[in-house]
Image (tube, rainbow, N blue to C red; front, side, top):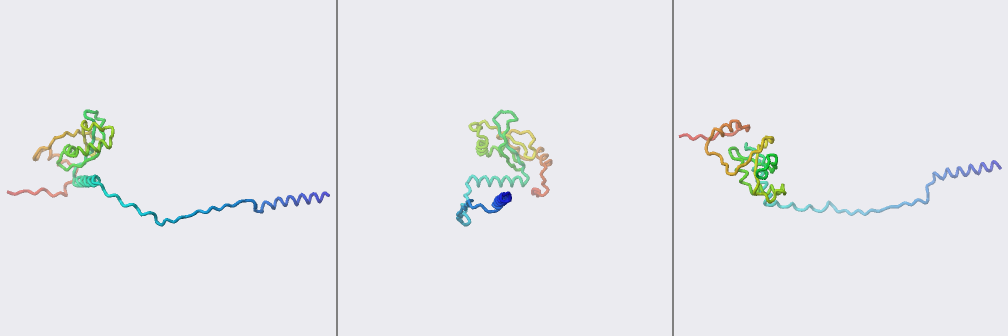
Length: 186
């Protein structure tokens, strides 16, 4: 009797151990199908937009700026503030290239209406104060220099001057490749 009990216990243990290696029949497998729609190489790209008149004008002015800067003109940073404000209240509004011998203030005030529009676009809080703008500038290569106020109608003197000669003599621009002006012989 003892032997039959031991055998039946052994058979039941072996049957439990072998069921661990048999795959389960009650597992459910799901298969999802995805539908792929081929669209080819995509939709054709939209045609590029035509340049507006203002964009063409900006590109022309940009190329003129580059041309003046490349030929030895001075580059200045332009600033604006409300008239009579503190010296620390200058706001940068852009840069300008001026040919040698030309006045920066004249160049600033020549494009004053476009400059005012750009200032109001960049600084909306200045809208309505356009008549109170005061412009200033400093050399782009020396950004730490103090800002000089641009005065309207401050023209250059006519003819050669000692100050102009000294300025040309001490200028950091290399003019060795520039041909000298023609000399008229009497």
